[in-house]
Image (tube, rainbow, N blue to C red):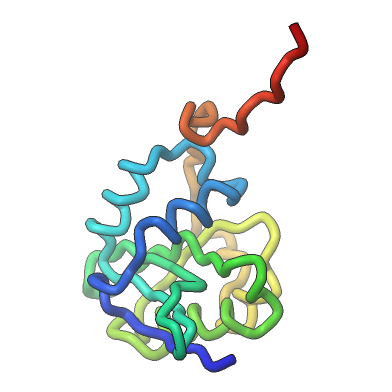
Length: 151
């Protein structure tokens, strides 16, 4: 299969992004409206598509001051296409091949350190401070449907 990486915001499929992020541990507090606003308001977005069908298979977004700092968020690949290097291609397109190639980039991850280390992400050291977000409950639209109870 051939893949196409594109930074066109108009090409992003909100249905794909919403569906993918509903499965992501880090996005459970968001509603569909939140996700659509994040796509719309992002400094930059990257999509990965099946070159033949145009179906979206991956996504990432970034927020930035546009001059020297950016935050990478929501890097996600459809489960059926994981293991094909698409995460690497998304990150490459976002941080090395785009207008933020000389920025200081930050991100948060619990499980993809190996991917980001390939792009120079490291422990920020003693000059960085982070204020953790307050815990948010799962958004009602994210909740898994409860199994039917016998009557």
